Image (cartoon, rainbow, N blue to C red; front, top):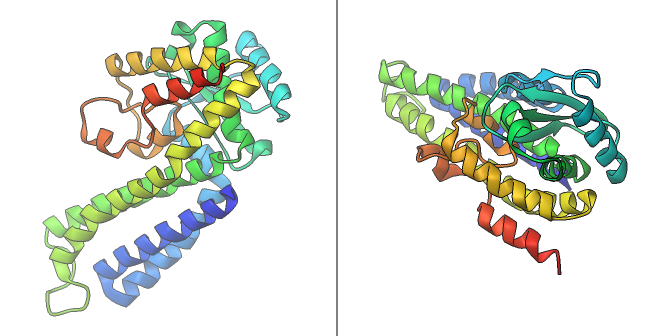
Length: 280
């Protein structure tokens, strides 16, 4: 099912790119952007995990460098029936974590330096189990592709907006709407890309919470961790590309900003309430 979602996502964002191309250069622009979309989809499917790691500036760690973390992930992976993922640490003080990869055999789990400092072993285990649940449920492919393609859409939208501001594009008597149409496209399509992310991401967090609690053996570690992470995220900012924000266990942009309007995460209070309900 998630593989189908991934293809639908790539198709939807490809259509947006083609429309943007048409706004810039008519039929020739649409054809050019169609070719760009095909290349992006190929790259997004096979290399989006590497791009996500690079966009978050995460670095790999070995068993010798982080033995306790490595052993915890290996133990949880065995419980979940998953191969051992690659491990990364993101150089950020904000406590957070994410998983990426197109399938369990090509997966990775990344945690921030901040999360290793504030969580106790039970809480960290709950967070890691949540990320492994994303891999087990095979929804990391959707999230990772969304990060790659939505990031590209946003960059192209920004370029298109600057082009419209400086008068680039066709005249009003030509097909496509000229500068005004370009400016409208520049505003709408980054928002549309974020809406597609939202439609995919919210339900998967609930499912990953439930599966993660089952992998860890208790919902308590994850529920306590979520409360700690939310509180810390409001105090400690993270410099991260907004296109990758949906990958994290909590929204790293949880400040009073425009990005919060497009949050891809359900409320922490509701997630915690559902987890505590599992005790019964």
